[in-house]
Length: 256
Image (tube, rainbow, N blue to C red; front, side, top):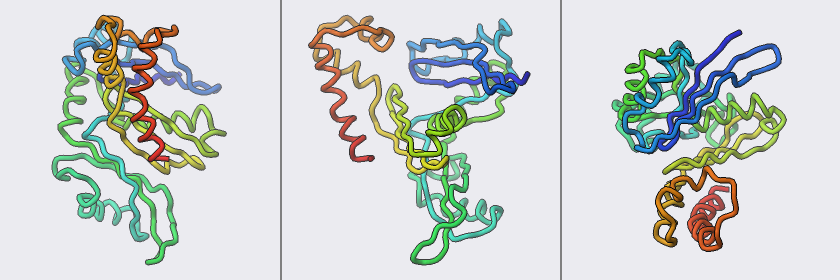
C-alpha cells in the first residue's frame, strides 16, 4: 500500500495526515490537528515529536502554501509548444505579478489548449508564483526535521484536486471552494474539472477574533477557542461575528 505524508502548514493550526491509496480509493490512515498558538514561530518544534516517534514517514512529504507571497494568475498566450511557453513565461510573467521574478519560483499549467480570441487562437495558462521568502522558510522547516519534500503545492489548488478526486460529479459541473484562513481567504471556482477563477481576500478568522475583542467582554481564551466549539453563542457574540462577516460577504459578492 502506498502511503503519503501530507502537511498543511497553517498560521494558527497545522494539519498532518497520512494517506494511503488502495483499490477502493484514497484513505486517511492517521490525522493530527496541531495548534500553533505562536503563529509561524518554530513550527518544526511542534512537528518534531510526530516524526521522531516514526508515527509519520519523513520520505516524500507533500506540503501546501498560501499567503501574501503566493500569486495565481489566469493569462492567455499565443499557441506555442510547451518548451517555448516555459521560456516565454520567464520574460512575460513579470507584467502579471507584483514581484521581482528573480526572487520567485514559478510554475504553470495549461487550462485550455485552444481559445478563440479577436487577435487569433490562444491558450489559457494558470500561472503560480511564490516568493522565495515565503517558500524558503517552509523548506527549512522540513529540512530541520530531516524530511524529504516531494511536492510543494498551493492550498486552493490542492483543494481543487481533492474536489475532483472525491467529488467528481461536482467538479465536472460548476463548483466553488472557499478556504477561510487565519489572515487570508481564497475563493476558487471549478467548472468542467478545470480551475476557472481564483481570488485571495484579505480576511480570516483573525479578523473575527479582533472584532470580538473590541465588541464583547469575552476573555481571550474563549475568543481563541471560538472555532473549536459547536454551540450557540450569546446574542452579542453572534452580532459581533455577523458584523465582522459583512465586509467579507461583500467581497465574495463582488467576486461572483
